[in-house]
Amino acid sequence: MTLAVLNTDSFSTGVIANAGLGSRSNKSFATGFQGELIQITQSERLGIEQREAEAKKSLISEGIEPDATGAPLGFPKTKLDFERDQNGNLVLQNGLPVKKAISSWYDIRHMIARNTFIPLEREVTSESGIPILDPATGKPKTEAVVDVNGKPIMVRQVKVDKELLRHTLAATQNLKELGITSIAAPKYKPGITAVEAFEQELQKNTNSFITKSLRDFGLSLTSFPQGTTMYEALKMVEDDNNQGIIDSKKVQDLKRDIASLRAEELFTLKRFKPFGGNTPTQALELLKSQPERFRPTPIEPKFKPIWETPPTLKIDMGKTSYSQWKSAVVANAKSVNPDYTNEEIIKKFGFDRIVSLGAGWFGRTR
Image (cartoon, rainbow, N blue to C red; front, side, top):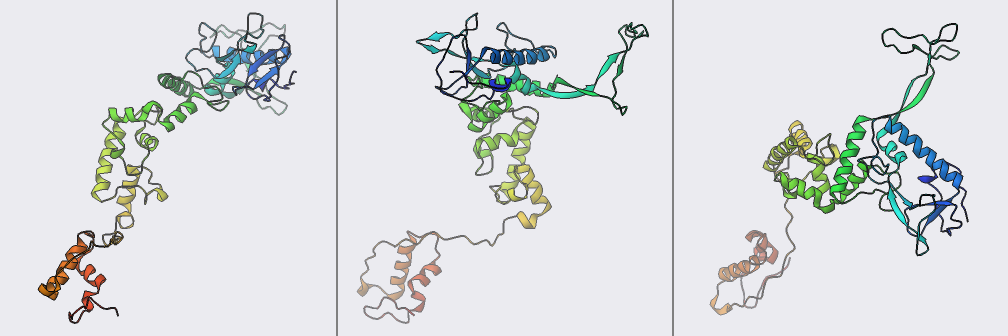
């Protein structure tokens, strides 16, 4: 059985099906999902290879070098394909195709290159059709091609973005340090970039990456506001231009601002977050600008813990005066309810309403 895939982007999208291998003259590739295989015809495979070759050509022209296997040097594997022999036939093991991770030039171009548009130019020639040379450069002169309205005609040109290239290579290296060399499905979604894959690992704190990084600067979660996660802690001190790298200046600012907040008895960012105070620095700016709004209120009530029944108290009423008996009862109750004042305990037992201590009288209700 052969599935008709109508466009060359089938390499990255495709239609998933559980199908037999069919003829070995057909070329197949894996989606990355276990037990699932897309089979495509030889012509469709050629379309994929043509797309790959075009992406490779554009990246090599931009200075991206291939390694010994022809894969883009310094980038992760991006796809799962099937091993093929020199003739392009599937390599089978126990009757099943052998999967292998590969680097797709098309995927790498998606990570680091962007479309730009430049004016279409043509060579300037003499009346006899001979190119006219520019005396300054020695190369043929060119002129912009315009449309019927006299506006330049723009053409698409793929160019590597230097910042994207730097971030992608750094993310790839960080992934390698975590033991990850492939960002292919099913572990990652199809089409993911190295930067996005590394960010996912940061969110999971894989191999305690963040924990170790914070420790190098003398930080732990106790250095941050209460309720801060490891990932949130990293983002508070992360270098703006280097993913996963801690900025030493931000660390010093954090320690200073945390001390200022704690001096005001502010230990979380809960009251600041609705107003954009997602970091200690931002919270401190809000506190300084509107102290009456964000400073804790001194008269905020402290909620009492649940009352616990005092242990049994045995007193010889014939040898105890009323005041001694009341004091003993209060002390006994306070031993298990230390957050309650004597006055609150007296009121709770109704001692404030006792007129006299008669025989067998232990208090009365209103």
